[in-house]
Amino acid sequence: MLLFSNADKSKGSEGQEYVVIVSSRPDWMSDICSQLVLKNIEPLFQVKANFLTADVLDLPEYISAIIIDIEKSDNCALLLNKITTLLPSSAKCLVVGDTDSITLSQQFIAGGVSYLHYPSQLVNVVQNVKDSSAEMKNRRSAIKISILGCKGGIGNSLISYHVAQHIATKNRVPVLLVQGAGGSQDIDLISDKALEKDVSELTTYLSVKPGNAKYTDDLNDKALERYNFVVFDYPIFNLNKEDIEFVLSSSDCIVLVIGHDLASLRVAKSALDVNRFLRTVSGGVKREFVCLNQIRPTANGVLTIGDLTSLLGGDISSHILYQRPPGDPSKPLRFLAKQNSAVSALANQVLGQNMAANKSTGSSISRLLNKFKK
Image (tube, rainbow, N blue to C red; front, side, top):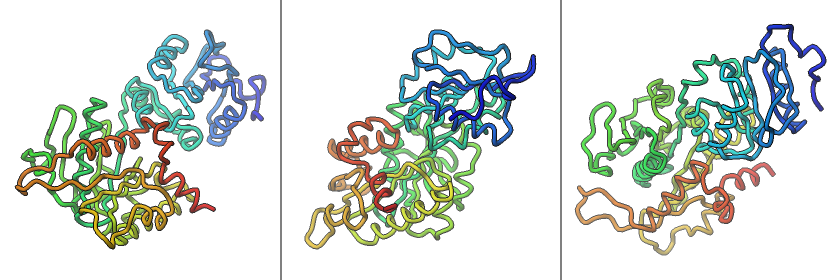
């Protein structure tokens, strides 16, 4: 049910700028309008049309912002072209869709258009509408991906580096790898590059910097906005609950790295419990993954994958098989084909790519959270 029609008080006086909402879905239209009305954003002008199929839109003369329902569409190039064709360039544009994908969001941002996922980011609609036109077009909000080691020596830095490298190579956008102060500090060995005290450029698109002593300084650093993606290499087994809550609430995506042991499993499950609570109060992180890194050869007495999934309450998102380290400890570890394929698949899951393929093996945390809620 719509809150009101274009015939009542939502219609502004002559010369007043409207916020236009375009959708053919009544429930979607009602949800968007509710958010705007509750924050006194008006006048509103509702266009009951499917933007994906419309050849022309009946719009008012004066428009401050336009909110568009793109439903399940992920064809960013086509949509950006249609926005340019159908909508006045002077109006701010916000697209809201059903696809929860970091990659899709970054593509729209690169085109000067903000993207929100419906319904998980519904509460962010008002702030996006209030943003100035210049901010809307020039803002490059970095996607923060926290890779969290649940035990010392679990290979967290190695995985963080290869995930960051995969994103930089595949997407060809600026990526920054931040190594937390409590980490192994061996990115120089992994990358086989000498690092500077501040930011070091490893490749055209990948840079690395040492983290600050406090996690809050890293995650709130304004300099991060120069990058499309920031990958944080953080150990969390030695953090207190307050710091874990801050990391979870400040990240767009997390990867919990565990091994075949109860110690790392206990830390991962505890972090999931904390995040489950945070999500009940509109905090926490919505995109979560568990990565099993086999750092030792298979031996008797260790927890099997079946044991781990049973104790964790869900499946493992990614499993990196054991790889014998090089004979010379000064040489960087280079993943072989199987290990590199597993890390690439993990990076794609983080980016929200190939999700259809991932559904066949199961998304560990989505099912895990559902089980926790029962």
